[in-house]
Image 1 (cartoon, rainbow, N blue to C red):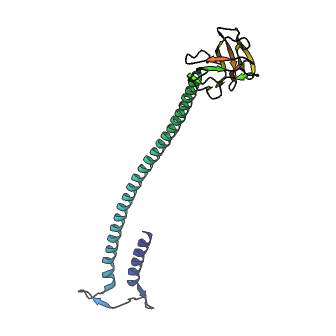
Image 2: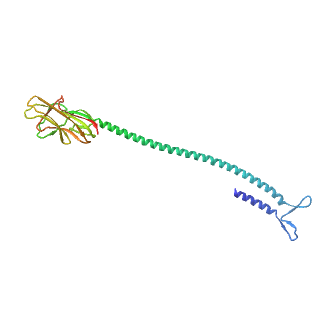
Image 3: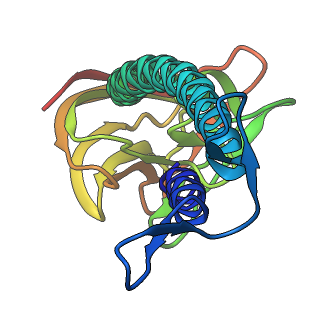
Length: 264
């Protein structure tokens, strides 16, 4: 716009310069350029006649250009206002998205915590469900023993093994959690002059309780039980007493059972 005004002003200066008159030594004003006579006989300048219409034309063009520029400025202002509104809306949307992201992260954290608690509760519930019962022989009948040393017994016929803490391949019960447990075992045998029917409840290699009976004839039976405080990983099993024997058949006379009373 400044360049246009400058050009228009330059045109006005040029018009006035062409119509400028010079002063001679006799104080007569002599016009530069050809002269013409009016109807009264006075000379007139052709440049002065054409300069004024040119000025009016230039002024009209300037006004038209200024009006167009004012309209364009209003359009630009309106566009700027629209863009400013859009930017404010985008800022609001960005703030809302950040808030939603924060809320989603909080919900995810809460869900993860709930999942962890549910898994812990499930593990705790599963651990609390510990119980087993088994007898010596899975099939057939016969005596086990006598042996000249105390020998671990493997109860292979498993009736119940909730929690899988008892291993029917080794005869060992391994505590899955710290708590109070109750164990019971039954010993059945046929009387013999030299071999009693006896077994021992063992915790981590330590003799706890014994079931013992000895008759020279007829059937004999004994049992015992104990409540034990076990740490996680403690081992409980039954040992056959040295030089004794134990009998079992399809009636499952000789058994070993245990269950968790409560955790601690």
